[in-house]
Image (tube, rainbow over all chains, first blue to last red; front, top):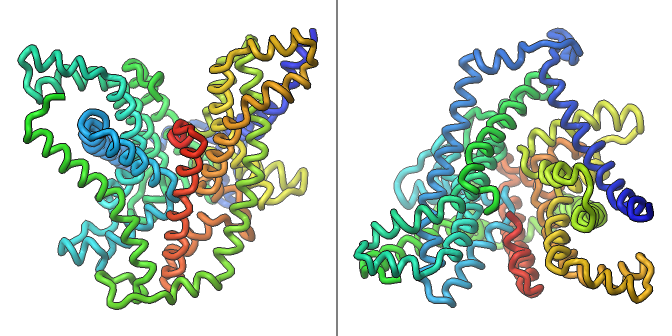
Length: 271
Length: 272
């Protein structure tokens, strides 16, 4: 009895907070997705309709926005993996111990640097007359490419750290054994390192994919007029909250599907 | 590992390029804060400390900084209490719905910030202001931040509680200590450094947050990230924004350093 009371005392404040302040709010917003908006007053009308969800999957404008957002998230994830794997391999297996410690610190510091500042840095670098323009003689300008570069930059540490942790767990003896059996560097990498590393890479992609999917700040800073799911939600909030809610629900659904898909690799245990 | 000379050289080169890629943008903002050209033409025509003087006198960033610190402290305090309570309940007791609760804690940080933000905004507009007379401001910022800060405190405290098990607490009880005495003399001292690490993480998370804040901050109380975002696109504010940015990068070395002093690298890494 006494134990029960203690447990209730421990649980009540945080649960009250999370359920009332958070779940309640979240439930309300999902419910809003099946309501509609009065076209004259912009007020939310509480009658059930699937119009918002239907527009989402049939209107080519929104299909294109969803497609573009997925393209960005996929490209950023692929680029992060491409950069992080050799870098993490170097950190874990090649660099001398002192360099390794330094590299870990070098990866951690930008993780703490302000998100906005980093996006802003790319804005000044990518702009006309900026560093890229005057040093390389050209810049992709603000748009799709700029968004992919900036997001790759922002989320790279989130890929490096899990991959590095995965490589540290891989015993050197496996690499030696593979070499003893006559495999070249590339074969060892492909047949020994990659299979062992897959769960860690998948864990990293959860961060890069979900963070890219929901982002709209960096898109506004370096994307020019580019429209993605996040910016579309933002534009609809004041005029058509139910539709904004439907767009938000779409990004949550995509994320859940992605999580379920990568769960089979064992990624969730490697977060 | 026995790498060919070429593979080894290649990896050194790739890694050097990655480090350059990570630090070049930060270096560029640092240099640009001394760039005498208002639009940051590159290379800088001449160097000047004018923007630093201007930023030191500007009211906007200073007020925003105060709001950010207040919000961070408030959210951290709330998260410390709620996160620890939850961690104690979930590691020391077995009960129905335990799994569901541990998922619920992660949700605020796993779902896109814009969804959380819009949800909280509609609660402020439809419930808090009409029913309780609370409008968007520092209080609502703290509520929003605490919601996603709970998870970092929870994770740190849970890890610590699991590592020590409950034998020390059992011993204290066997020696006749009441639950509160056990908490004060045994559990809390064990948790202290985990709480500190959790607090650093929570504060860092709150200090840098912009998405949820956009929807929970009133017009009169911008946090530092909101202030930066509002002024990013104003050409005459750009140099001041740049100086604020450099200061923020320099400040961001502190938590990594503090975490290393704590001897707890996990603290800095669990920023993930």
